[in-house]
Image (cartoon, rainbow, N blue to C red):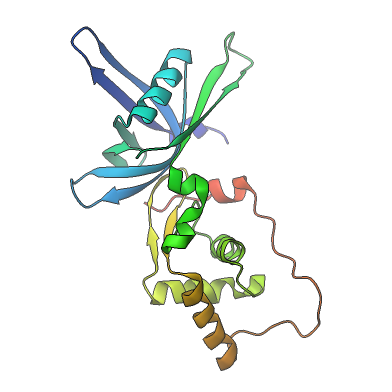
Length: 224
């Protein structure tokens, strides 16, 4: 984690009223968003993690609830305008650092779609990592798909062949959007089993899925 701050981005917020102007920048360590085709250089935010002081974090939380926009930039990430849609959730915390008298305030913003996991019903699944094991494990659990951990590489290959996996805009992670329904995934798996490409274990017993931590997901190199 040495020089981790060099991998952080910046979030800029500006709001002007008749009586005052609010303008500041805070550090961003994680972001997940969908780049919008129109207007250009804008993205719909799904996940945002920022650090700042009391006033800054309070202002960002209020701005998210009001649907205000921000400017985001970071390493290998050109400046882009971002914003959450309605019903986004915010969670606040504090980090007490040894060399600071006051704690650093932390805020996490999550879109309604990402927080509820209800996107699976609409044929959309937002995932915070692009690792094959993480994608397959997540989809198998969310959709209740049969299979074993060893099927991960094959399944992700099917997603790519069907153009059903799309890289998202990420800072500090490699998020993806998976398109497809449970019935579609089951039909792929059935063909894989029928062709002999996928095999069930010879012995009966519980299937042990890997334990994937947040470090495993978020410490991966972002796909830019």
